[in-house]
Length: 355
Image 1 (cartoon, rainbow, N blue to C red):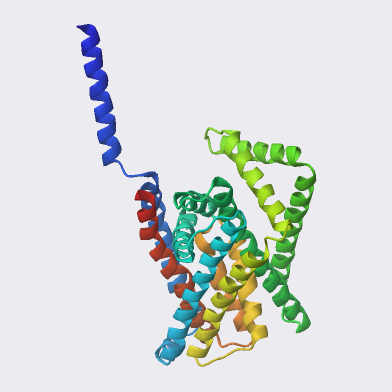
Image 2: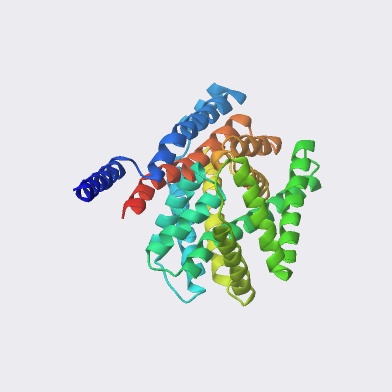
């Protein structure tokens, strides 16, 4: 009789637990619900305060006189930019002789980028990409490459553009002390990163041990339990990716990254045309690469909000673009390249999470 009662109670507990699991939202919903209001409020603050740096009346005049066909072209090339991101994932997976459709790569890029805004920055982006690429039937090896390599290629191109822009500013003596120290900081971090990778390639076991200790330290600071196995697996995937790139698998992914970044920069250019102030390639590159790279480094701020807008507007204003035009162009570009894709990515993420 007691055994029967115990079984009955156990069954009831399991049933109640299952019921609570069905009623409780998944972790992704909780994260979005927790951080999305902050993301929106921060974005509103930037988009409302930044125009005050210029004449509000002049900015409104720029908006009213913007050329519609150039705005539509900006939207078109931004779409092509995301096709480049989808091709990037497609070409990375092809390194291990597997395939994922380009449009599916676009969908995953949009969703993973939105999740990265709320949880973990580039690490959250990579984890979400890995999970959803796996759902399309790609092996763990291919999914690991898809999570790690796109960020590597895109940031490499941004670094080249940022260095080119800084050299141009040095040549025309327009580099402020803040921009100079920011540039030195970026080069220092990149140099340390490349040195660490070079050392790690030669000392994989020691490198993995160091990464595990660092991850465990931060887990203790956050009062979270830590298991080293996922970290060791991630480090192993990074080394596997580097080996495959060294064997000649970098050409197609690089092309995808060039299309992604190049057409994104073209979006900004068409907004300058729409505002009636077309700029040369040199000025365009100067104001594009460094702010976005700074936004990547400041990943604690979702999408580099505030850092990208203020730095980009300041650079273009310093290069002779009227402040009202610079503010309108930068904010319009960020709406098309950041806010619209981010807001589209959230429902896609919900869909991918539940299917």
